[in-house]
Image (tube, each protein chain N blue to C red):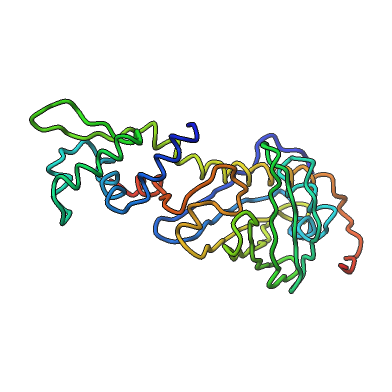
Length: 167
Length: 116
């Protein structure tokens, strides 16, 4: 596989009025590899930390009924912990997981991940789709689970989507 | 945006009337009278809401004594909505790391190990 100069784009949408966050991202690698990078703890650890090398992957059971927990250090030195369960995992196809940021306990989102095989050379490419459902608009807008350092209060509103909807 | 300003802005927006006012102002300046019109409350009450938004630096009021139109402060709003960019940034970084990792994984994969 050649190293491409341009990165496949990531689209993120937070629709107005619905407590969802959706993303879509393609990879120039076969679905088996992308799935494997989600399943194998040694591989998963290397990318889920978004480039930081201090990710502590304490539990990672990427199978139906499995658990996960990982801890990261923020820029401010504070520890951010995330945990959840894998409600279902279907090899090379699909997974549903819960997601909790321990800084906002009991605000749990449910995220589904779709691994889609795309045609191409050398085993093809992959389209990864994520759909996260939050328990409330405030939870979605408060970005619980993103590890954001700023304390977002419950009254925050998604102005960008509000303004986007204006003619 | 510093912490205090952020707090004031979020507090200001933690009210449906004020959010509605901000939404209205996104299309252009509006006078206090016109802003008050859709609400079932006194103009003084609406004026108080506008004052909160003003103190939070989200809107500015012109000094036109007659009509006093209210303007949205676009810069403040851009800073507030940076959160979605932060989310996007985190995910972008993750997937770039994943790209680099996928490039290193050999094509022949060993059989799946049984998780603990």
